[in-house]
Amino acid sequence: MNRKGISLAIFLLFVFMMPVAAQFNQSPTPIAPATPEAGARFGDELVTGDVNGDGLPDVIVGIPHADGGGRRDVGQVAIYFGGSNFGARVGATLQAPDPVDDAHFGAVLATGDVNGDGIDDILVGAPGATAGDQVDAGLVYIFHGDRTFDTSSDRTLQAPTPQADARFGVSIAVGDFNGGGADIVVGANLTDITTGQAPMQTTVRDAGQAYVFFGPGFDANTATLQATTPEAGARFGTAVAAANLNNDGFKDVVVAGDRTDVMAMTPQPNAGEAVVFFGAMPAQGSMTQLDTTLDLTLRGVTIQAGAGFGRMIVAGDVNGDGIEDVVISAPLFDTSATLRDVGEAYVFQGAANITGTPAANATIRGPLASFSYFGASLALGDVDGDGINDITAGAPGSEIAGQASAGRVFILLSGVQFTGVLSTSVALQAPIPQNGTAEANAEFGRAVAAADLDQDGLADVIVGAPGATVNNLSEAGRGYVFFSSAPTVPFVANP
Image (cartoon, rainbow, N blue to C red; front, side, top):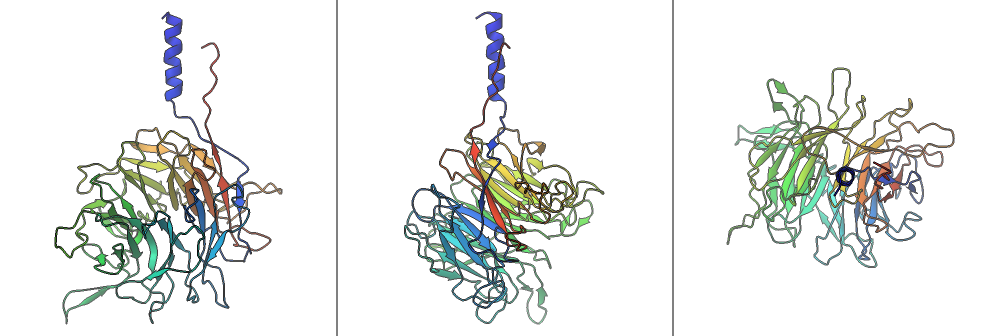
């Protein structure tokens, strides 16, 4: 090969190894409630899953402040089934069978096949629901997926001992932690914990707990998880996730307390912390389904008071090594004394030998602007088609052309080395209306999800804007689907 040919080959190799930005339709498909309602906040929560068994992902939208049955803020969930008419109409609506004021049904959503029939089920958190006579104790409702999709609730979960104001259902995740099939972990981040022995007992207020309900029955040998030393106001259970971090074939339970005090060089109150409980096969004859002794502690790169580390957690393989990782956000992180509540997120890579308090491998940031709340929402999905998950983060407080909290969404594409500080490479925002001004307080990015809705092999990005005005109804809320398309490699002429 001559010198020119060698140069061309090297140049082309370089070009094809370069990360290529994903492309998105800049006229996203809107999703709106069937009947908009002021203050309902459609799009406050989003998840995806195939809940009708047709092989296509469906979009499930939380409307936690919807009124109904003469009651306020009972909440509701809308389902948009995948297919050629996606987004044209609501396919099904879910409601609590026993609605109460301020239950906020739909504030938290999760999907997963919990009954083993091969179809995703929907888990709906109502952290303000009444359990027994305990107000705001919280409930989780399970709706089994089905080819005809019955909208009746199939099962209700509550804390082993319901407690008023505990907010059970503030976080939900599904995973197999002990090899016995799908299990469910639920956070109750305002649970009070009693420590010590009578008569010297002490009540630790709002310490928080999480509970693991083991499948297939979900009612025997429930495991209770809490911090080694419960702390008042720590809000343990604010976020939960299932991730096989140590690559042993069992999902591990990740639980965050986003207001946990952390000791650094000086005490950092409300900095936030996450802990991991490794899953494993129970010993033969053992009644213990999960070891409740924590195995890992995860913290931000810079431990900072009030950062809210642990507000959101997502799990999946983001570096392509076949081992699941976790991404944890701190949306109240201050980048400097003058840049407040900017927010950032951290990548913790899984490894077979992960132990102790592993340092974050990388920090992810969007543009630096106060009150952006970067990381208020997180999602994983392969939007650029390279076979590796990309990281999507919502920044619902982002200002656009002077419009406060208009909101943006940022994406970090895969193919990067997870080290140091990484900047996102793709930005999305709501379409600008005809008046040419972004909508203030729309909170675009309050919720995000990613799934291949059009079956082209690329994950599409779904975004909630619960503060958006619809038909002159403030905070009715809406959503958007940004369909991704295959990135193009620049044409090279006469290199």
